[in-house]
Image (cartoon, rainbow, N blue to C red):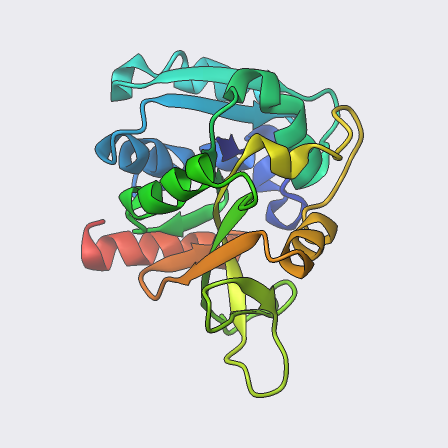
Length: 230
């Protein structure tokens, strides 16, 4: 699932007429970079949620055939926040563990790295989530997290190396069992609950990653493409 329902307030006025996932990086929509990397990793069945200007997202991406994937859309009349949006899309996602990526990040993460976590969740119903963490960025991010000695995600404590959630994760549908389907719900409270119960593992990624949440970081993503070509 690619999360693409955000309004993009910090990107205005660009997002007044263009949904954030369609803002261009390197001459193509930001979300297209995810679709290409997912297809390269063998992930060909995608669900994309949308709210603000969602009809433009569907018109631009279509059924995904141009990338060799099949896209289904989970439309939200108003944004349901992250956990709420995923819960709303569960009927499209099915009964097996699935991966989720924020549509407003730019990264060279190889989604094949999530295959062991997806397989582990399929074997062990007690494991309901797996987070990709990365070293803290030089701009404000969410709650500081860490990985313990057994590979479980946890809230960062004194002595830990604080990490940031990269907006890339794998979940089993059970993770969202208590999340309302049609009401806004953020992810953090559910993260904390799963971490406390030792139901969520984590890995550390140190590759290319940008939170494309401002006009300045959109420009930085375009600079990155000019420099690296990818």
